[in-house]
Image 1 (spheres, rainbow, N blue to C red):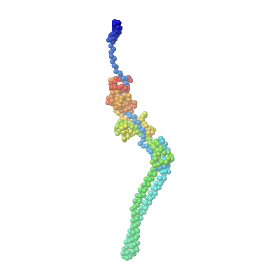
Image 2: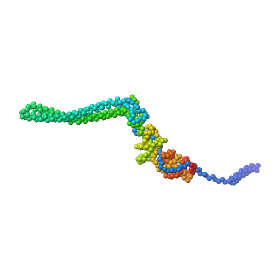
Image 3: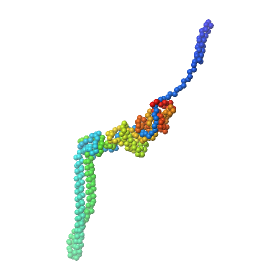
Image 4: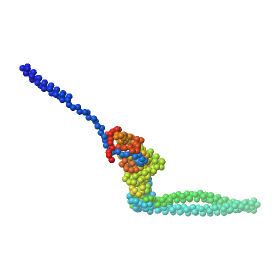
Length: 409
């Protein structure tokens, strides 16, 4: 029984030992495989040749059409609107009638002030004649005074010789007194003539001012176009009663329109330097070749930027308040290189193809090219030379030294 149990255990162990021996022999005698060598991946990319040159960068702006000469005629006085030939949005020529108030509300004031002015003119003329007569009368009164004095002297001498009466002397002295009073009154009239004339002339000046005001109100009751322009708004209709200062309509000239656009703060110094240096700058309306000259910049800026004003030609037909996309042609820059936008990484980095690998350099991004293909960006950097190959394919895993190969043209 013991021998049987030993036989049952020894046979499986022998089989297991033989299997292990066979596995170890097979493992020891299998052929040796060489370890695989890792291969570096090479990326195929498009390249463009760098051609540094003097180029014109651009800047996209958004502006609104404005005018510094928007006119808002007001009622010169109380009255009724007689006619309104002007219509909102209508174009008019200089000298055309836009609106008229009833003349009967203004003509009486003109007639009254003219009549009062004529009355004052007559008073002034009468005062001058009176002054001339007073001067002539004063001369006569003065001669009569001398005769009265002589008469008193004569009667006094006769009385002292007992040849004249007391009554005669009293009459002579009385006549002298009356003549002295007459001379004094006449001299006062002559001396005060200038003062009376100045008073009348002052009244006439005041009346002339009233007449000028009345005539101006009468003239302004008919609103005649001072320029060729557009009617922006009409506030009244025929039959409306208006008071002094009430707005009647709004107009603006077609040849004095401007586009007000916001320029970012980073470009403010560039614009001011160009204006101070007399360098003309222009902007184009998006999608056209029409150029708008830069007139000036605002007198006040803030951290977001500064407003610039561009002249809008009258031939465009663009109306007040329109929103426009502008492309500002900035001052020309030397050594600028045009590259596709996909060649840019971050805020200012591109890669060059050198010795089959990517070489990164930092550049200044100037903006879209205004003197060529607007889809290209202008950049400038000290590490770019003429003939360098700029990698135009944007690689998500771009890194310094990455292996690349240019695509065949």
